[in-house]
Length: 231
Ligand SMILES: N[C@@H](CCC(=O)N[C@@H](CS)C(=O)NCC(=O)O)C(=O)O
Image (cartoon, rainbow, N blue to C red):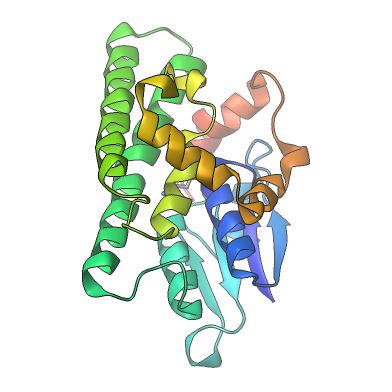
């Protein structure tokens, strides 16, 4: 059975949603990233980047096991393995890959930096806070433009590009965003939120979601010496 090494964060949710959409049997291996479990040797054997999500598919290409990290690569793998959630027609397929890369290289990292400088940095650095607030708003503008011309990011059909992006657009108020300014994002977001597989996907490991502020111990693991130790 497919193993998903994961935790309830936006990058983890992408894979939880994809397997729920595809109806693939899977087993979750929880990796508590606030408790330094991402540095355990058994996880490092799957991903040298010690970040969730990662998967192990015992039935990989050629019938042999496959280890894979990076959520975008995992989504492409699952879509190609099943022949679903990625258009076959070449133009739509490249549109899907383009918006998936836009999420992986833009939305994820920039929203992550916003969160860091607005919520976690030990000092308030106005330049960094403004820079990422502006970038987050700009990226919403790009998505809004796309969703004004197409139902979904790849075009007519829901795809892994939407699955990659949607979890990062949850709780927009935490990024100073009001969907009233982005009506097409709002329409798209609600349509995806209503999908039963999406609701099941975000429920995976939900009992482990951090409530309240980050502890000093978690801060050390994620941003301190533990994070940057040579491995
Ligand atoms: N580009 C990676 C990013 C993965 C990532 O940043 N994962 C975070 C949780 S959302 C993590 O595991 N952090 C643990 C750490 O920083 O040590 C992907 O999309 O898979």
